[in-house]
Image (cartoon, rainbow, N blue to C red; front, side, top):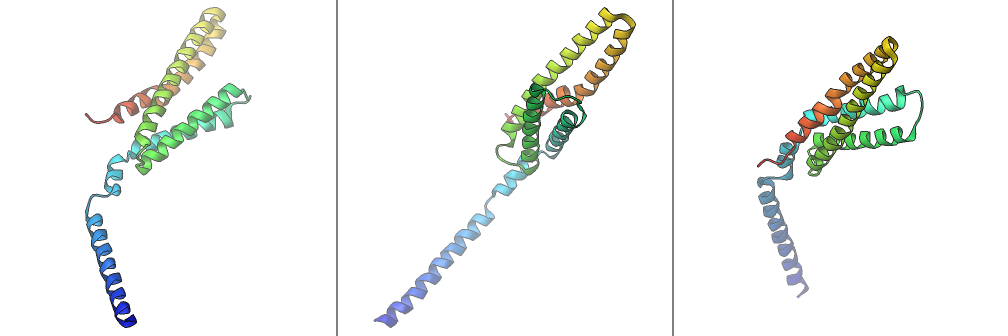
Length: 166
């Protein structure tokens, strides 16, 4: 009896492994997450998000001479959000589109606030302090001009590009 049980057991194991192999073969020919991940990848958007995060964190932590916690915490959180979005968009992660839209919206709102504040401050300096104020206003306008592509135009384009297709 033991011999017949031993003979049946390997046959069952072989048939089970054959069934596993056929199931594996069927799933490998079906569309996988790798194909949809390739469709979800946005290398340009992810790369620009990572560059913007590095630029923002480098300027705040490396260039600013004084520490002020609202600027430090806000810039670090925005830099982390942009870096997460950039990494997800490069990898084609399923959550990357949502994080990218959130990162774009937050960056756009803060960028518009920054550019508006710089423009108002430049006009105030120019009007109040005459020729000396105009020199300060030129510097503020230059900073605003450098901030507009990274913190206004690109986030708006990113939000449009990452919208769900209709």
